[in-house]
Image (cartoon, rainbow, N blue to C red; front, side, top):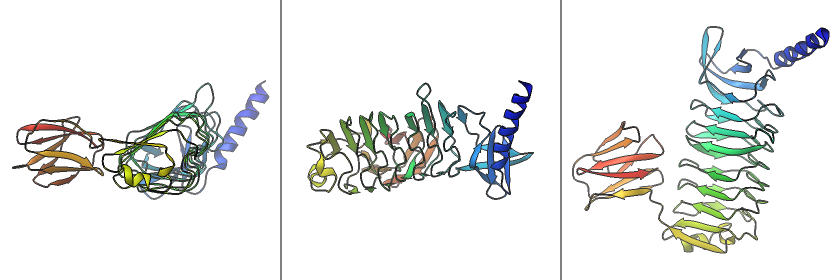
Amino acid sequence: MKMKSLLKNSMLVAALMSAFTAGAFEYKGVVYEAIDGTTCKVAKNGTSFSCTELTFPEIVYDGETPYTLVEIGDDAFNGAVFLRGKVTIPATVKKIGSFSFKYTGSKAAPLKVTIAGEDVVIGDNAFEQAIMDELNITGSVKTIGGQVFYATNLTKVVFPEGLEKIDGFGTFGACQKLTEVEFPSTLTSVGSYAFMGCPKVSKVTCKAMTPPTANWGIFNTSTTATLYVPKGTKDAYAATLGWNAFPTIEEIETTGVEAVDAEDVKVFANGGVINVAGAEGDVEVYNAAGQLLYKGADEAISVPAKGITIVKVGGKAVKVAL
């Protein structure tokens, strides 16, 4: 038994060391690779096979040298079937590489992924065929490649403001349990067959005022789902390739304004920008924690934070969702 245990440990060490290249180092069971003197990424095959759930730190150490984690490298955990449960990707990460989490998760403990970074780019096949049932984007994702979530177990996907493109082929193809999808106002294009093979989808919301460009077949051509679009855009969606496959299109209010107290001031959100009309004096914008994000007299206000904001103008308060 002792010899067997020693052999097993030596195999684990050999597997771990095989991932090392120049500038690579191990920190708490994960192999990282230095990009420059201050930043790093998770290396290819970057695991010691001992980690299950993972909360990546923003800062990792090679000895006493700190590095900021900015990328999950290509093939970082491809085939790591032991990786399961919660996976938290921190705010410092701007790129999730191709095939990085393919074939991960288990039926007993599906992946529950949180992405906290802003303007994150997700590469092709990043989570393909992972046993994954939850995606929580607390920051924002800018682009998503082809077959990124192909054949996962996701049931609902909500994209916050900031997503511009769903590129490639079959990004969410064959997600048999998917029932609801929500796109932000910033979306401009959707790739071919992005949601083909998702027969249970019943509700799709797209907040873009201009219908995103789309190829034929982004959803099943036989879909019975209802498409919800911003007020005044129904005809445009009905005339646009891809979106015109929906048998039912309904208009909704998508400004994100929950309460408007100021009688002579109009406040609304569009494309991630807060618009203020009719204000006299300065406008103040706060996040949900009460931190001041902006003060000034502009009519179009861009703020760095996504989520709920409080706009104060003329002694009144308006709650706006970005």
